[in-house]
Image (cartoon, rainbow, N blue to C red; front, side):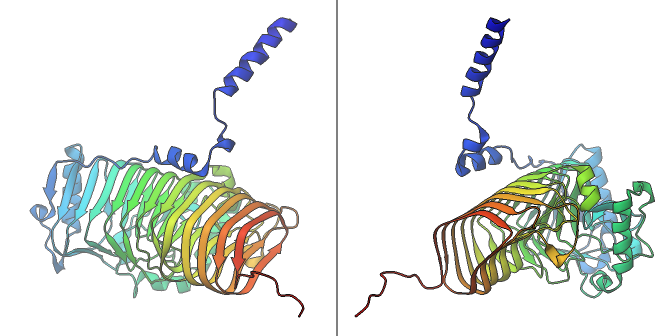
Length: 452
């Protein structure tokens, strides 16, 4: 018996010796492993010209029937690329995508969505601020699909500034109802919003999709979040440009999603450029699908915040890489990790490398007590690595870390960080094992003065 146990222990030891433990992998190796699993979908060679289905790019004619017919043809033909030539195409209602579909918006083309709420009914299954429910359809909606793409040099215009965007003034009652349903675990079939409510729809949503590409297009004037990546995997967003100044016009919101690459993006948003989420409160913890393996690289940040994790992140966020990014203009905050004690979950294994900001309010901010509210479900925030980050000016603070008394933020590492000026250099509370190596905030102090 002892000999058998000894041989078993030897085999286990030898087996472990042949593997490289994840915790010993370098940042570069971890990043390489993530990128191996992100492959854009193959685009169909079956070309369908949208004008052959009756679309007219005259800025007057409703082209939704033409898109519906073209998408149905793609479905029947097991895939296709719908080509949209130059022109302004009005769509009085949503585009519902299908499998193996690419919509290519050629240079000079623009999709402009109508403003009649009834055109976006019946309600579809979606999510709003981290709670699943039925609501007005996203303007471009993909649900449970594979191999879908939106490409080209054209424009997607939500046309929402004077319509859906103004619903924010009347949304509070429905917003609170959605949160109550979340907390009470109301059956999904009973979470019916849409008509009579004021929850603004998303512009583009990929929901439970695999193998997604969005490339080249310009996105503007969204009713709510611009691109919501929900419970999806293997998603590539590349060379997209934003011109989105309505309320809550986040750029990309990956939620319950994994293997996501966001690269070479020109942000110009009235809200977060990238906001990584994983569900809200009770429902997020029940869903328990982590947002992970997300790479943000070679981007130009401009807007409210550069990269945000939270605040709806109750299922947890891990393995996020922000690489080789700079700024295209002002950001209120550069890197912002936010949660509160209603959320629970975790934020861990976050890597920020070779990133530059100009003027910000705060360069790097972590808070476990967002909005100063919540209790009972503290978030575990740990293992954040910030290396080679530069910032010209922080009008409020260079580095802020605010943990929670019963769950401190821990194991945060700063290396080679330079912030030329900051009203407050460092502010730490309820934080443990915060490591600074070659960090300069303000003017560098060199040789000490001496008595004369």
